[in-house]
Amino acid sequence: MNQVKLYCGTSGFAYDSWKPDFYPENLPSSKFLSYYATRLNAVEVNYTYRRLASAATFEKWIAATPDDFLFLPKAHMKITHSFKLEGAEEFTRAFLESLNPLRDAARLGPILFQLPPSLKKDLSRLSRFCKLLPKNLRAAFEFRNATWFDDDVYEVLRDCNIALCLAENENLETPHVITADFVYLRLRKPEYAESELESIAYRVSQYLRNTYPTFAIFKHEETPAGALNAEKLLVSQTQSAPA
Image (cartoon, rainbow, N blue to C red; front, side, top):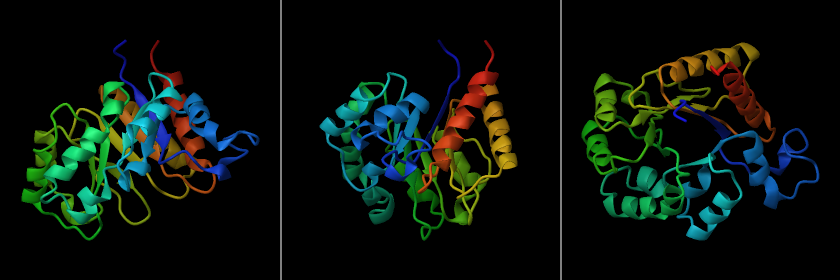
């Protein structure tokens, strides 16, 4: 089946406070991921931002989820915040190798490289780093300083088929520019009005219609609102998809 797909989820899944509105009241935390995967089909993995995950951890997650469920790792902070992309070749190689269990199982989604707000536009730094990444790897960059929102940055990303992460939060909203053959949305506002969710659903339907596989990740909160919004978006697009 070659149908263009929507992947929806949240940043993480291990939140006891999501009971009882998302997780059943008596569900043990060891079963959170397997239950989450019955309602959503992707999760952004913040775990990989602070440590290199063991193969055993990934294998456990793979076993707990269905074959079409994807994991979207966040690049290690050493790459994005310590090295700031410069001189990061060796550690980046080690980080990517740590993801091999997900890649080998065809469960690896795009990798999110989230740059610190203090890092301003540096075109040559970005270009050098992007060229290090394997061509068969899906990657997205989230820029949190507005100086990066420029045509020459988009061109570097396009040349390497890397997505400009379309992130929105209270302080900064990324321009809606497509730079890869897929779309990565990070929906970070604490609350979304119904009209805003309808607008997101419309945008997503257009991406899918234009054959862009789309990854839509809502922010986790103490409440399960993000997970419920992700599920609502996933169901709405599934129902509207052509038979």
